[in-house]
Structure formats: C-alpha cells, structure tokens
Image (cartoon, rainbow, N blue to C red; front, side, top):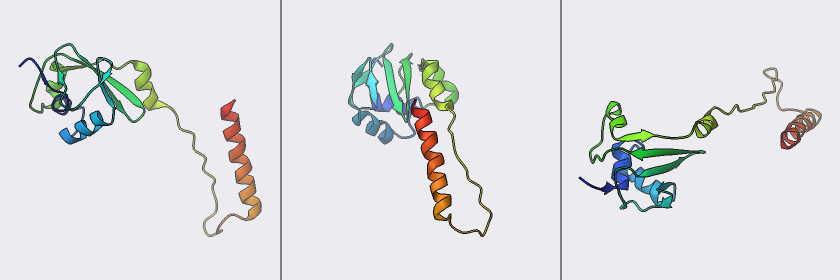
Length: 131
C-alpha cells in the first residue's frame, strides 16, 4: 500500500470517531496536509504532516505507516506520530475565570441596585483584562 485516502486514514488512526466526521472536517478546511488544504479523497503517503484543527487547538501528526482499517488505541503510535507543539497543548489548560455571586435561597431576583452593582463589578473585570 503506497497511499490511502485522507479521511480514511484519520478515521483509522482515531483522530476522528467516524469517517464522515473526518470528511466533514476536511471539507470545512480544518485539516491540512503538508501546509495545504486538502479534500477527503486526497491521498496521504508515509512522511506527510497532517494538521487538524479541533476547537482552539491545532494538532499535528506525522504519518509513519499507512493503514486502512480502524486500529485499537494501543496500535496507533505505530502508524502516526503526534508532533503537536507544547504551546498548543497548553491552550487546553488555560484557567477560566468565573464569577459566582452567592444569594440566599428564596431572596428572589436581584433588585435594581444589586443589578447595577453586579454590572459595575463585571465591567471592572472586563476592562481590567483588556489592559
């Protein structure tokens, strides 16, 4: 085997759960091969680099060997090498600030004054982050 369809390869090495998910991601320009956008029918060869955009992270894989049937997770490293930079992986661990305002149960909706105080608090936090 010297080449295989891109959508089939991504499905076989468990980058996507279904082949149709892989094809849809490729069609919507979330997958590139060697720096160029591809079509689902594009053939990949050993040594190609595949970049896959999932949520806010771009995962990068190097094709080590070709495979056409879906592989168990323990066999995937034999066919595909994950070369995603650490900076991309760090995007998953970005702390998310949340504000929780505690109100006693049964006190109802905030009054106009309480609502204005909440809006001022939120506005202060949003502008502080922008600087």
